[in-house]
Length: 498
Image (cartoon, rainbow, N blue to C red):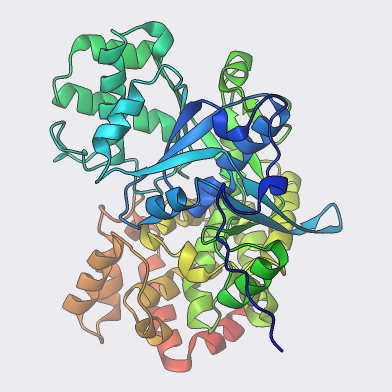
């Protein structure tokens, strides 16, 4: 006889009291709302919001988070239906020991959709309790939208929304220096907060919000570059969810998985560490004057390899990171690219880079985490530009040669984005730059591979570095694409590795 699945959903009203650890004084539900967060996705809920929850449990922060959704996913309504509560299941290997624990996170107080609740979001901007802003809007979120306007409800872009929030706050508190906010950006781009700050100031000038506002932004709001590191795959598959539901005794539509490892490097000084509060006593939050070394190794080695892995492993028949690592051919290719091409391209101590790379390989092989390749593929072309192209360039500059593993992966990416092979059978995640690549393929036709690759590589809107300036790159990519079309991705991988 099969077990009966629990029917009670997770909420304040259901049987969860013992699963929430309250701070030393009072209740987690009564804490003031101190943080405005742009992004409702799995990563922030499994990363920054967990740090805040841990600090609340210790009584070192005592504040909750208001989250804002802007993608139309409907997640804000689901968060509110569960009173902001959700479960994080931490699974993996830590210090040689198997970790498999679940905890209810109670740091989120409520969620709002920017398209439906913009006036309420501006109301919260005027709250005297508000201190911090978190954001994770992916690599495409921090960019100037020249057509954004202050009179839109809400403004179209994330920087536009933030500018409107800050202006509302500045006006409400008459530009009081003490009411400035600290903004912590979690987007994986270099100098993320400084780029966001420059766009906000540009919008303030375009929208003619006044010199006093621009001065208040510059002098009394702190935009902090950060580097985030944790693999948060999101919701497990349905079979795993049924087992977890039975184990927990309640149903959680927002439950997410995360690996044990987590690190948050924030650029700043001791005064900043004191200002952000939730970092007190937390050794996995590093506040340091320069986060560059942490960013470089993480974005290039972990995120870069993730981005390289997606198209070639998917075309090879795999669906998850763990499956890719269990596939002997794919795993050998991943190890080659990471250790023989990405690590040697880095301008940092090689032993340190190699040690981090081996840690990442162990994290990729985590048997508990079901990390879908398609979830990594969101904005795949932009990620390739930010995370992989710099390794391609730096390897060539250091050795005078092309990194052939990255070349093969780049070729597989073009097949993936243009929906060849297995990629034609699924709906690909959003990829704003992918449509341009597909247009070039259609114009060139199936037979003119060199012309197609040349058009892609000379498009300065797609890549921030000139790919056509690398001797032989276009020809090598086109040759690899033809090879994969002729003999298949797996045989092309085997030939490369041999």
